[in-house]
Image (cartoon, rainbow, N blue to C red; front, side):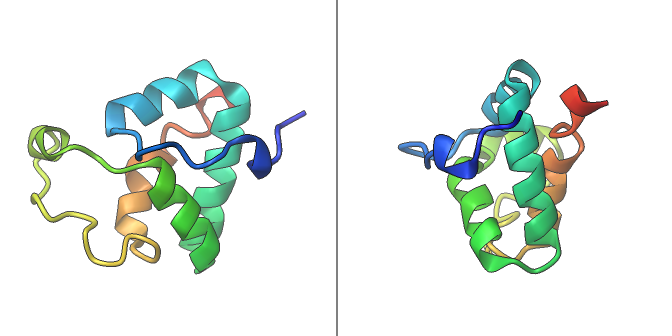
Length: 96
């Protein structure tokens, strides 16, 4: 049974791309939580988008290595679906 979102409080600072993917792969309950929030955010749920943004912000070096612009996702990350796609692929990994 997955933990509720209240069991995954906002971290002190958002996790980097590597950190969030590691957490997704190590913690199936977190993977399910963040996957569900990403899906809701992609459907326009701004509160879910805020949760995703609170949990995830790629580092400048990560963006560079992914060949993404330095300001990728800076424009209203709560509703920017392209940012959510970065972690969407990994979130259901433990659910497959």
